[in-house]
Image 1 (cartoon, rainbow over the protein chains, first blue to last red):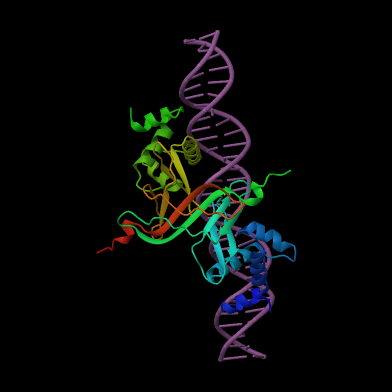
Image 2 (tube, each protein chain N blue to C red):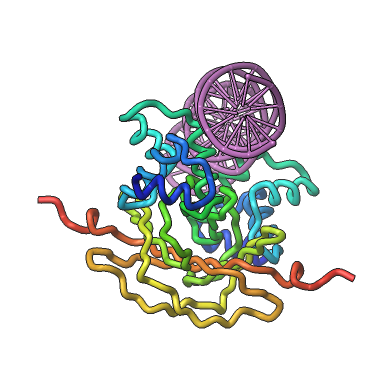
Length: 138
Length: 138
DNA sequence: AGTCAACTTGCAACCGAGTTGCATGATAAA
DNA sequence: TTTATCATGCAACTCGGTTGCAAGTTGACT
């Protein structure tokens, strides 16, 4: 049994082919993927309905197996998430638009909210150049 | 001459009625406004075309007079911006969905990006309850 | 003033990510 | 094997935002 399937079963859900395929694809990715990117990659081995993909992604997020990231281009990006959820930072490349999770970069900002505000969670997004776009082409 | 008009002229642009009205509305607001909210408020004193409002907002952002905030609901929010642009944090209320700018909260996170990544800018979004939603109704 | 180029506005049509409704297919429990 | 529940696919829809274009304004320059 693949780790992907295992993770799905562990989360008390049905390990349907669609869910296995999507989670597998997310686990293999090096950056957060959009719905469109996933659709494209999944199309290589058989078709998968647009709506089903949306629903599988929602389900994965609901189960805590994937992470939904809101970007500046009004497009959701998804990435597989490990066992525990921890507030990590996101890196958005301003050149290629890809979004990477920076697991190691935990924001340690001074938490001095104005009076009346109640802290819930924080999300730090850093913009800049990713390694691929940073490296000059020859 | 109103401060709004003055700011518009200072930015070497035409202080058209539409622009004055929109910027004025943004300056008056206590939280970042969506296009829809602006449309609603502006409708009280005369009509303003949807598209024109979009273009005015884009223009204001371009001139550095307004700030465009991307949210988790795939809706742009705008707020007037002072003279200088500084990386302030955003506060999103998880109950009412409003977005506030926390001018005083400047993130001072340890900047240790993985090798290869080039820092550009950072944006910190804090989720929680705003003062209005925090205060229990009687 | 009169002319002309550049800019602004409004309307309509469009785009695209994401959603909803519903019928059909698969699955698991009884 | 029957039945209730959940998953999938298709089509149509929603909605924030954009684009093209014609008409109206504005400002600068004779």
